[in-house]
Length: 114
Length: 111
Image (tube, rainbow over all chains, first blue to last red; front, side):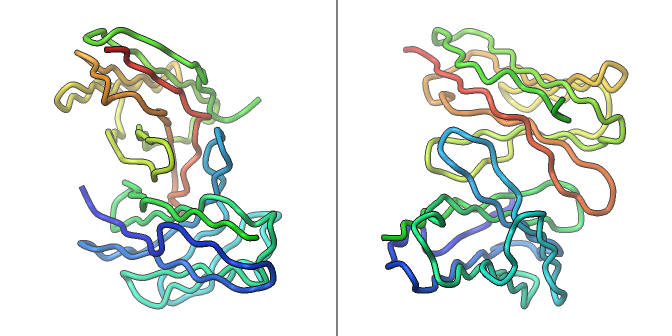
């Protein structure tokens, strides 16, 4: 299957700082990428949808000024958590779709804000 | 009522057993159906993708879709301890291609 990578896999930052997470499709061009958040023992919660070259579409309740998403190329999307606070600590996962409907997920990034 | 219902388990079976995982859905617009396996602290891994009613087989895995009953299943034959994970059903429709997930079923295969 197609491969999606995320970097970093784990990050610890201090409250008030910003953190950038990268999501890359390694062997296909991703027309659409999605960002999810997952709390322990819960299913994935969609945060936003991004299409290459256009602004991301955020789900209701997700602050677009806090979670900045950039999809600058067909293989790279980034999520920046600005002015992070402890309540932003979570597991963030990206996914990517090519021309079909199969959605491939990255390995996830565990963010801890101290 | 949730759009996609999935029994959260936990489900515990002995090694070699046949496992049956199920989801029901209420939105008849769903056209594309997927099963994912997620190990603890990892991203979901796509196991099966189908878009028509009927069965699709891949190795030890069989995905079954019954659109008339709005019911999908994943069967795992000769289950192994390495199959122990959370299994998520997911479905989508339309050009947006966003997935709607079930809540996940936690499976443990005992050696």
